Length: 253
Image (cartoon, rainbow, N blue to C red; front, top):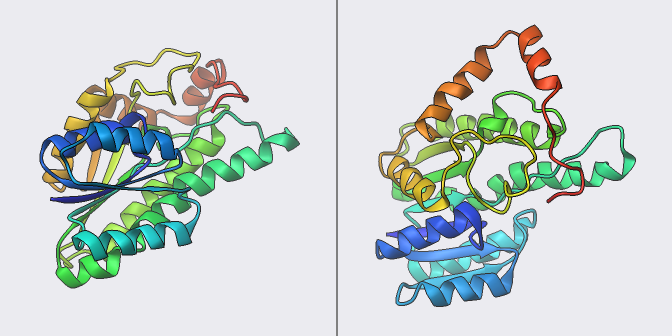
């Protein structure tokens, strides 16, 4: 199996890299932190691992990485757009506008940039799976996390559009919506995180959903029920309950 994965240097991405390496996969890992990538690649030996350091907002960098992966190993069987950021921000704060832009570009355009180098080749091969890591935060707007919620909602809609576009092509599109995963991104959240899941368990669940080519997958399963309640809650009730919720600090990455 050949797997190309972004956001591979920590959190869910690192856990997925370790999971697939243990399964004997050939890995292409892309992330911003070059030293962390090199450390991970060394730890994954004897698995075949190629790494690229870059930002998923840079379409040209991902195009180069994608072309090099295909040239060296062939068309990937699985492409996972996992890179994402979550930062507290407020619309009323002028200094937060750059933060909002970075969150939206990373979490939405980063998915597009990850898939773009591979879609045509996968369509020609009539095989492969494109996986986008979204979030249950995309189900409803969360106070203080408007950029994150909006970006994940946009990612969910984009992935659905792509799934329909590729229907019947042999290429599957899998939308994954994790709940709270114990990663650096969630470590300093100042609010309760129900059903908090370890990254290695999350990786196993996600890999199983990918293998089954599930169109839409929420993990862990109790979070699917909570997410559904969030979606159907009337606005007056949702507003009242969420208005008093603690928020991610503006200065937290």
